Image 1: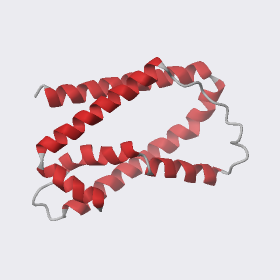
Image 2: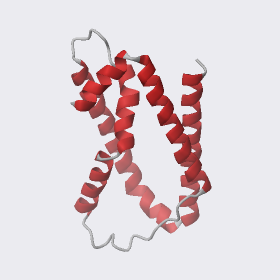
Image 3: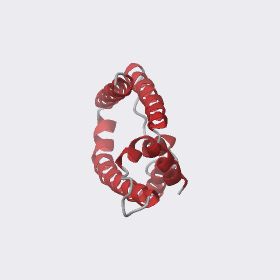
Length: 152
């Protein structure tokens, strides 16, 4: 509910949305540059066998749920899709968009996680390449966001 209230304020203030998007883009650039220049080495999951998949899934859900980047995404990205004067209040619109985003992430993360872990553990060079490609994508998206908001 707090995010929905803040999202409503951001939707009414283009300056706040621009500032928030700019800071997000700069942070995305920093993450991308770090991933490209210093990719982490794939770690061995020594304790993986001792934990059930339910425990690992709960841990992943907790990490994702408390991720400030996800909350910033909701604040910076979703308000532009709110409709002023719609039959649904801002809080309901944000809640629906958030649920759609969460469902999409669940499908994608489950699909990727189910197959990528095994492949990347068996091929450490592939893990490094994936990290560097992800970093390059973050750099490109951050640069495009900055260009869009600063040059228009």
